Length: 226
Image (tube, rainbow, N blue to C red):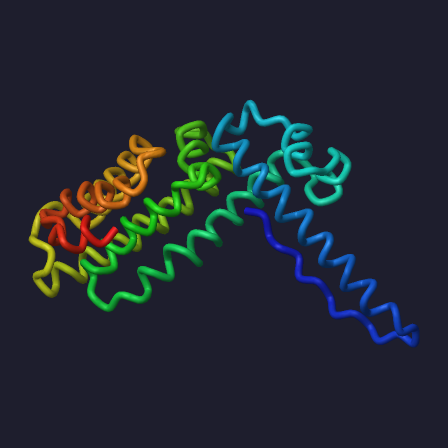
């Protein structure tokens, strides 16, 4: 997976304008990088890796192909960086909701609702598209996607085990099997209900927790308050 390069602190300079100039350059570089990553994620969601054209990625971001190659060495490097960007964004927006819940079932419900909202943006479906495209292949991009998917399944399995320990989730097949079903139901519902906000959030939660043997929350919270 792409590894971010940590910038070294600016050295003191006798020229008063050196600091602001370097800072401005770093800011411009960061803005360029963010725009290119978002454009790449959108293109990967729509067209997949094989059909992704770097000229189009750069153009839709408002930059030249040369600017893209100044930041990324090739399509694989760009894709790995875009995947990392998406995963970091998911952690901030969805993982944060999961971490806020102390009860396993509440955490799984929060994950389902948050993931559905997250996937309203076309860039968020990039990981799903790449996982399907690279299924069964030994490729750096496919391996990175599978690694991130395994982390999600492991998290869900851990929450399911914790829920069973408190008897808030009924017994059943192994936790990993249930976690795979949970993630599959969640992603499948999200993909099927593209453009169906706000119903997708409610139905994604129902589908995901349903495989765990749980019932949806009361209509007053699940529907009336959305």
